[in-house]
Length: 397
Image 1 (cartoon, rainbow, N blue to C red):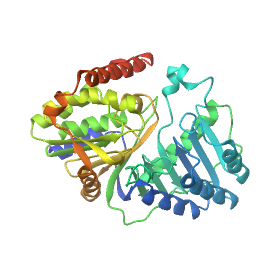
Image 2 (image 1 turned 180 degrees about the horizontal axis):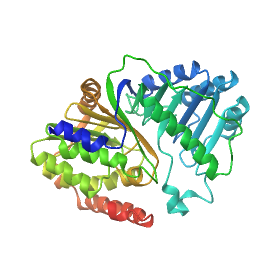
Image 3 (image 1 turned 180 degrees about the vertical axis):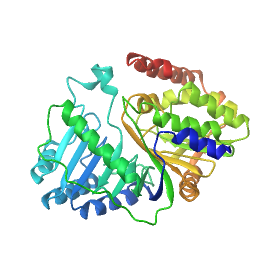
Image 4 (image 1 turned 90 degrees about the vertical axis):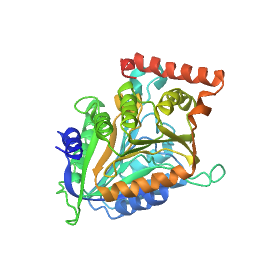
């Protein structure tokens, strides 16, 4: 069996590889928000939308208005937001949505402060929309303006995938299931039954893809396993862009083994960050990887929020899952995994362009960092491990 066939067999066993899909890669808000709003504006039966952050800026306001328009014309609109990520969403916005007929639920609402309870780290982190069981969007983009012209010349770097095809069945089932589950755990039964829908899609799709989730029951390690399988069988190239990068020992070993057998391994990391502490912890891992021959670049044009990868020019993934213990072991996440050369080429070209706007890290210079910098990184990494230990996951970091 060839390496490519072994990769497919290893990863796609039980996950649901579906041929015949039509996928479109969307980069940052300029491509994502118009596509999402256009799909909502032609919805006739049902809209499911899940997000970690629902901001109150003008860009998020355009999505809010589209949801309200859909509800007002009789579409059943269901909005699921995270209790931590969307905790600052104004009450007036929630009231306006509900008045328009949008059903809103909050995943794990804040109770006495989320930092006091380690279990509250289990968040709804996936970013998903599915409209009329006809078109879906999966990726890393929250409902928030990604352009800060005062700070950066470029918008925040992130991706989403527009999906049409047989994969819609799995995505639609997952969205409905999670909505019902949240309603059940909060003792809030649905007042309206979902409309009967027969999933539909264009017939000209050619792409093989899988919808992969991480939850706390049946699919606890599916996303992590997809990465590990791809790394283990890579024979030419690995290119990973990830906003919050703190992989476990096995993941790091596979990266180093790939370099040892001649694979070109590139990591695109944050140069500017909204979580300085977490970036400091991640940098504790850089020296070991750089010494092994992994190439690391820190993106400088804006904030990097992407969670994407390309392996060997045909395997690719885009989604909400960071490569860190919070995403891989705690949060609800959703990724699209693709086995298609054209899609992988498109994503790779975009990531390589981003690398030209990045600072490459020199292994010798990195080893010469000052002792306070090295100490701070080790300390931050140790604190992250301690936090994970409180949830029972520390041994995996």
